Length: 183
Image 1 (cartoon, rainbow, N blue to C red):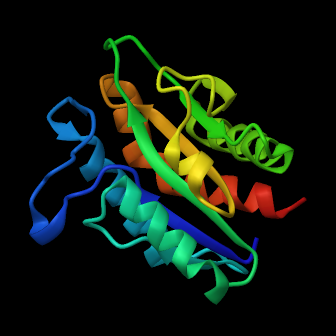
Image 2: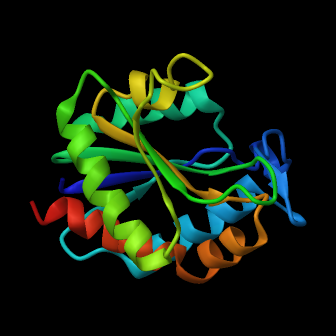
Image 3: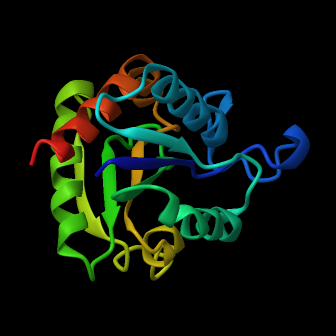
């Protein structure tokens, strides 16, 4: 990968209005937390990787269309969308979803999650095909025309997960991307 598209799974919506905040928990939203670490990654950069932030304010269909429209502008694109899971306060861990029609993304997901969980100390909830979830398939993973992953970075409903992602999430994501690039 030479280009990495970074997408906030739930976003503030047009004109800064929260139209899709995603999961909520512990006084914050999935959109707010994902934005923090995506912005931190963009600010730091990843050596050897051109980082491209998918514009905020786009719904899922618009994010996918924006990525697909812009693929040709960048060499070797890869796309990652970030989320935080929600369940009970005891639920913990990180999950990576990949396109089951693409073994490359499964392997990249495994590399990413191993490094991400090593740095954060969060439990690995595994690398899972996007077709093996409650929605049947994940549009971001299935409909983006380049290799892509959807990352559940931790549980917003778990105070410890949230604190860990806030403290170590950006570093762990960068390390996970570097692990993918090391192959």
